[in-house]
Amino acid sequence: MAELATIARPYAEALFKASASDAKAVLGWLDELAAVAAQPQLLQFADSPKTTADQVYGVISGVMKTALDAHGQNFLRTVIANNRLAFLSEIASQFRALVNAQSGSCDAVVYSAFPIDGAALAETAKVLEQRFGRKLNVSVELQPELIGGIRVVIGDEVLDTSVKARLEQMKVALTA
Image 1 (cartoon, rainbow, N blue to C red):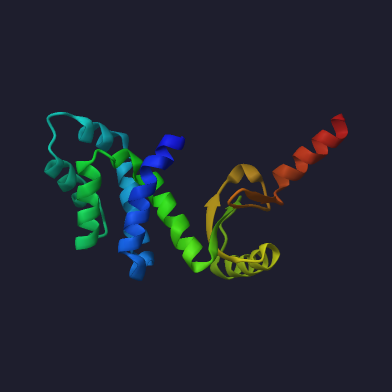
Image 2: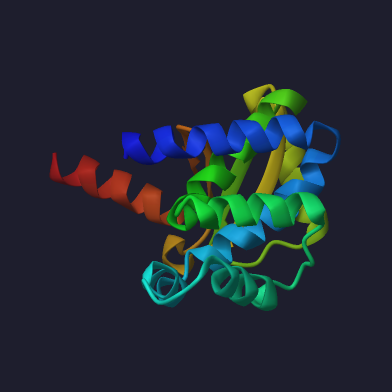
């Protein structure tokens, strides 16, 4: 795992320095690029000795919904030329960390058993920002196995108010 981070770091830092003025826009196409590059079929195609870098670039740019600007095209060509396509998700993760550090915010993932509407999510984000004392970029992921409540993950901190967690606590208390 350390090797993955070590290889991805220079790419993330170089991209961050080159796109400091519009890092949020870069983050949009970089996340999409990482999702496309995570497909096993694409990685297998890219690793084939019969496949050229232009063919890989053509497939990726053809699949992406967002058109890459010249900056993004150069970045993608560099990643392909250096056989670093498999590292794009880590590059995106490290780039996001750099953007968050610059803006003074953190990513927060709210796991919920049910969909959360916009107003409720805004109120939840406000409460979480007060509790953790920092600005948060909140996203929601559904996890029906939580039964009810939410589970919030911010970096290495977890706030679990789900029904599942409370049932686990009760189970431990009753069996102890």
